[in-house]
Image (cartoon, rainbow, N blue to C red):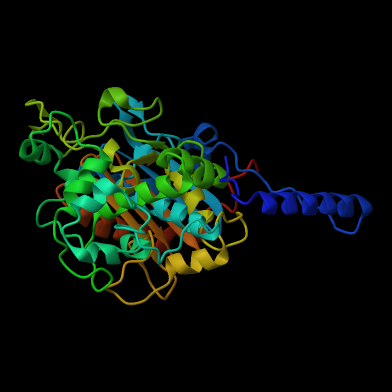
Length: 428
């Protein structure tokens, strides 16, 4: 479903214009546009054998040695160049006695923020919001009596959509990240049930901001939960439905889902998540009193929404990047202007829109980490994009991305020119 236009007169004009165009096409005044190729269902079509490395001697050994070094049970790797999927392969185990395949879906943690940012850009293109719009307080997008009553600091009225995208909202984790403090919030507020996103917002609004919005940055998971609520408010749809119907499906990504919290909640093609060997059980996030494996019940993953809840395969994640990179081989789902806005470089201290970092050279980075997973999307200036997601966390946490980047650079220097020239996004 695409958001409908509100103005009935405009709808009538568009319909009349469409009728004229149909007549013009029939008369030969306008040439028919060539049929756009539709990507295959990557998660169902791709198998490990399609990325045979017999011509890439030593490639698999580098990946497997890296996994052994960091104790990774399984990993998925995809490589795209100029919107062509050249390589997609699973390594190790997806689950007990189940080998990893390219079609397995994995939690991607904060890579989800890139998905959310694309949704915001689409809403701006359709004139449902502007990045400069106020978010909180009277006249803001989330103008709500409950929220307005909770605002403790007038600076909240200065927060814009762009501030949230760039982690410049003024939020601080000194009082605990509300997205990862569920159990403590339940204890402090004597809540019997896991807090809703509305309750988390009230908690945040009662806290003073750490700095004036737009003047500094501090990475904020809550900011992207707020963006998820912005999407719901202006679209009139649930966050998941809007993203599926206006971002993922138009890009050809049919296997993305919002994560569950427990192994019993996993999707049929989803992997099992493992923690490092020395990681002790933790208190369950819902204050049940039980001890659980950190990757299954340590945090409310499902409650992260656009901040970190998406699961997907590496080939489909590569396809999403191909749909927002400004290259013509895979049709983009956002405008050239939106691509440029998302990847614009300002300075080392300014987050890009959805991406962690974009450099003036054309290198873009998006990372994601929490218990049971580590994800890295690296887009290089030569148009090559490498996507790597594990189903195991390590003691390095977010720091693992540095070593995965080194793995990418090592493999690129040895094998980039040796990948088969093909495009597995399409049936060819």
